[in-house]
Image 1 (cartoon, rainbow, N blue to C red):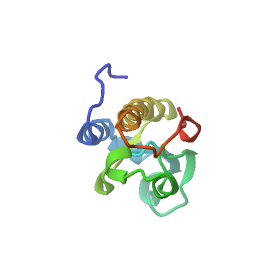
Image 2: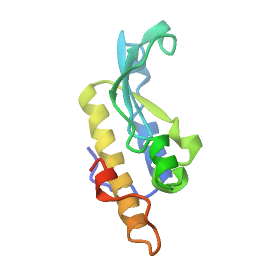
Image 3: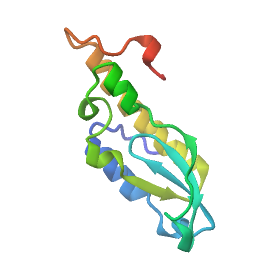
Image 4: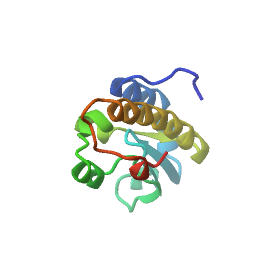
Length: 129
């Protein structure tokens, strides 16, 4: 895992792009990690994208959290176009390494928002960290 700390949504997009493996996508089963932290397992090769996605880890911030706690997607996780960016990776371990880097970025964003005067959207009980 890289020691470089992610500081923006574009860093996450770059991490995913550099981690993507077309070879992994051709395997019989492939892990896909998305920019919002979700990890899925699905069929690879000719069946990629045509079969069920089996969730291995859920996204860090869900749309329900956004709606219920006044957290804007652009501030809390990623702008919508990046929310669907993903990378096919060769192992479950690599998917979780990438997810851990995304988790640190999300945690930093939430910590910064919670410290913002007048912000009352997320309390410690609503956090997954």
